Image (cartoon, rainbow, N blue to C red; front, side, top):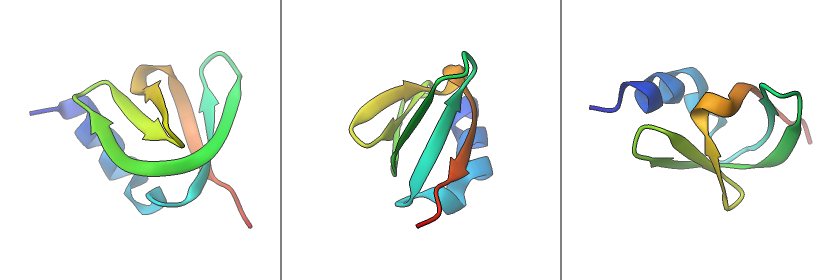
Length: 64
């Protein structure tokens, strides 16, 4: 039903409830808790911030 968010979920499912670094296509970065929340097919939630999947280059786990 939501192919973009389903593909994103499959790629990053092991990062839920962990601190991640989101690297955006424009080179900027955000660090926060990756929540298991999707907004329809277009966005995710990282530490209370809605982030469009299309803007994300990649995500990495932040080591403690």
